[in-house]
Image (tube, rainbow, N blue to C red; front, side):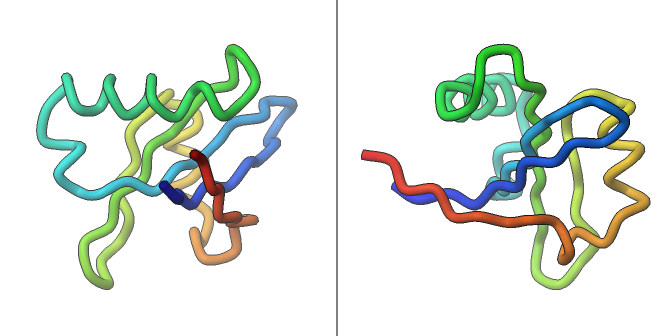
Length: 87
């Protein structure tokens, strides 16, 4: 499995932004399931923001309100994206 994520530090908070399929945002259960699945690839307690994007539209974020507010002010294309490969 591969996934794309960016680890960012802003105002002393280091967090991960992880790209997920838009369907993940349809139910609280799938949001929580995705967050738990990805959490094991990052340090314990690191906040995780999920990002979904349909076609060329503006991305949608789900996570801590302060982090989502910050991300809405940043061009997602300039985030330090990295592809993670997990077995």
